[in-house]
Length: 109
Image (tube, rainbow, N blue to C red):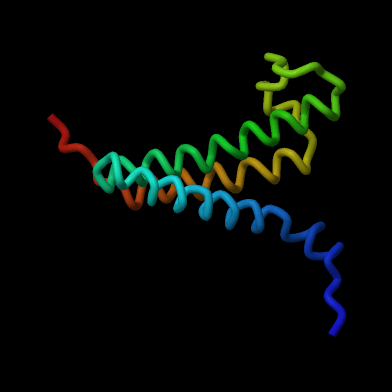
């Protein structure tokens, strides 16, 4: 069986980034568990996973636009190309939904 890796990259690249972000989050949360409460470690891990992809896609944008890093214009993620956008936003949405599901809400006063 011959796997068409180009097809997978063209159509499911975003899914690989989600898996990578969740793995990064799990490792950071596991390490954070030695220093923080479980809930705090999960929040730190998920934030780190999302931040990793924001930084990576920001750097990709800087390179594609020939900007010397760090460049504040690169934070305008609405200017990113389609590939950079579809790498970042699915990760951000999944991480945000996991934060909503996994982190208990503080009681309202």
